[in-house]
Amino acid sequence: MNLATYFKDFEDYLKFERNLSINTIKSYRSDLNKFEFFLTKTGAKKLSFIDPEIVREFLYDESKRVNAKTQGRMISTLKTFFNFLVLEKLISDSPIENIDYPKIDSKIPLVLSTDEIDKIISSAFSKKYGLRNQAIIEIMYSCGLRVSELTEMKISNIFFDESLIKILGKGNKERFIPLSSIAKKLLYNYIKYNRKKLSYDKQSVDIVFLNNRGKKLTRVMVYNIINDAALEAKINKKISPHTLRHSFATHLIENGADIISIQKMMGHENVVTTEKYLHVNKKHLVETVIKFHPRK
Image 1 (cartoon, rainbow, N blue to C red):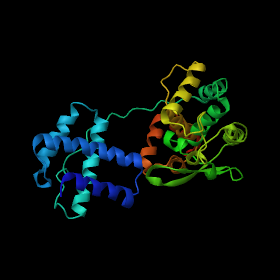
Image 2 (cartoon, rainbow, N blue to C red):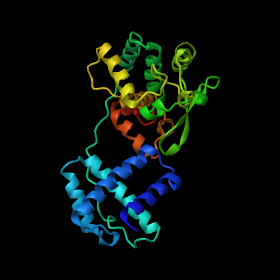
Image 3 (tube, rainbow, N blue to C red):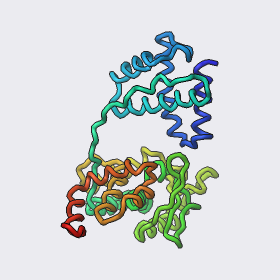
Image 4 (tube, rainbow, N blue to C red):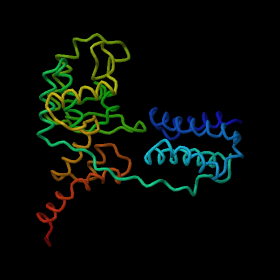
């Protein structure tokens, strides 16, 4: 068997056994394609030729072109791939087992104030398709959605009576998120008065947010909608769809929400990922202890 066959079997494993999303599998495949190109270039085309030294050479070669975060992802990809080969008894030991992840500087995510978010949402209405754009920004902020979760959001997964939406997140994992009264009103009005005027094909019939041709929005379109509204509101910060997600989690913590509830709403597999928002709000945590702890 050649490497391409192993990669295809690995993709099937990720899809059918690990139940990972298409985007995640694409990231794994992209890393493996680079690894395969390196192996071809160095003449190590067979599985038996791959040893820790070859892997280290590949990672060193890539480190000249990519940052520490991308290096870490590549290591994670290779570890998962070689663990799969061990699991399938194709190799006895992983050649990457003792390779450490690079140190990544922890960046504090940009967070908007509630006043800035109100200004951005208000500014979105002055643009064409304002009702849709207001609903997009409000839903992203008040539900903490990833941009891919917003673009894939389905009408059949909106439960207005229960004030809930069902979201299909990473790894095709479902979660329910409460709808605020403001988000529910904007969403309802957009679907009733704006979306119904569009012509759409069978693929888009259940998709909530559509462009003027009745097709699903792209990530770039959502990014532009948010940035245009921020410029209109004169918010001089580098804002992305993820900024709204960061703001959602931060504001929940500031108002006393527990970390486990936030983890569930954000769809984080590990609570450690959610805990970074605790570090953003050190001042708030100190104030909380002073206010509520019996030995303040």
